[in-house]
Length: 169
Image (tube, rainbow, N blue to C red; front, side, top):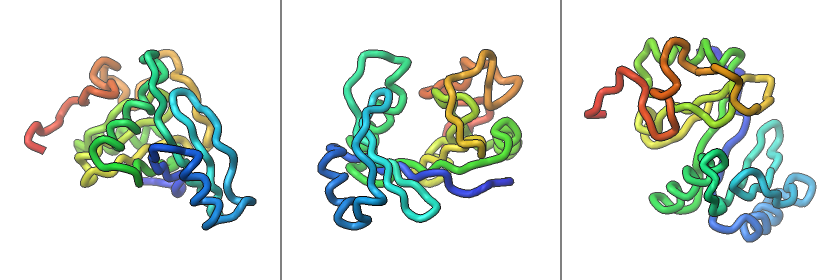
């Protein structure tokens, strides 16, 4: 797999403001940004050298188009509590990366953002890994984009499974 490094690490918390205070004490004001609202969650960006932490707090939402992240963050808080949620890895070509993983029968999940997909956490011992294109531009879905060309989008929903998944895994 041709990767360009880690783009960011997501840490899920119950209260972004409280968490921000802890990160301020550890990393200092120059590294810790303000808490901002993004889609259906609140986040605080922490610059750690050449890497970025995203401290995320889910918000309740009734809008299904905006709730993928909030649902995922809430599910993590309910099942594992606060802490590591996911790692985002940059790749030069997300379609090629998805095809390579598909050939290896690695289960993937579609992202609400274009040019991005997730490896199903059961493939990596519970860790969620997001693959996104190295240009760093997260965009809304492009018409007809699928990380798995030839696979109907209905098979790649956030709650769905792509083909070739062993049900016992």
